[in-house]
Every structure is written in structure tokens, then in C-alpha cells.
Image 1: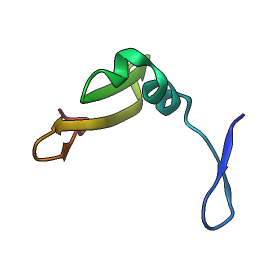
Image 2: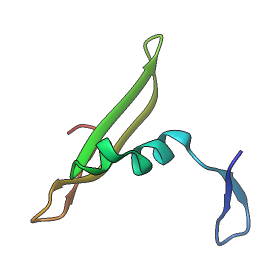
Image 3: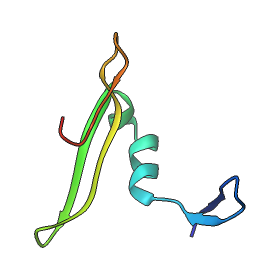
Image 4: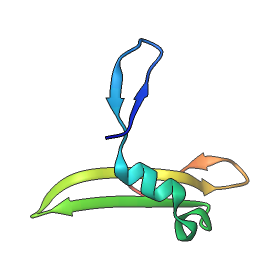
Length: 64
């Protein structure tokens, strides 16, 4: 399990979905994506990555 340390010194597990989105070339080609991960009707992750508007630097939200 990957860990990183916060300024407080507490260990927190890295999110494998965040790692996947940030490292895969097909995701890096897009200025931004909205991601929803569900299992059996339950939302496991709802996250925006990157920008919805590059000129105004508006971040993507899960609602986008």
C-alpha cells in the first residue's frame, strides 16, 4: 500500500483511482474529466480532475 505523509505527520493511504487518472495518457490528453465510480448502485467515488474552462481556470466538479 502506498503511503504519503501529511504535514501533521499522519500516514494516509493513496487513492488508486487518483493515481490511475493522473498517470494514464488517455486521461492526461483531456483538460479535465468528471468521474463517477459506482458499485451495486452505491457511489464509491465522485471527483473532478483538471479544468472545465482552461482560459478561466475553472476546475471540473463531479457535476460537470
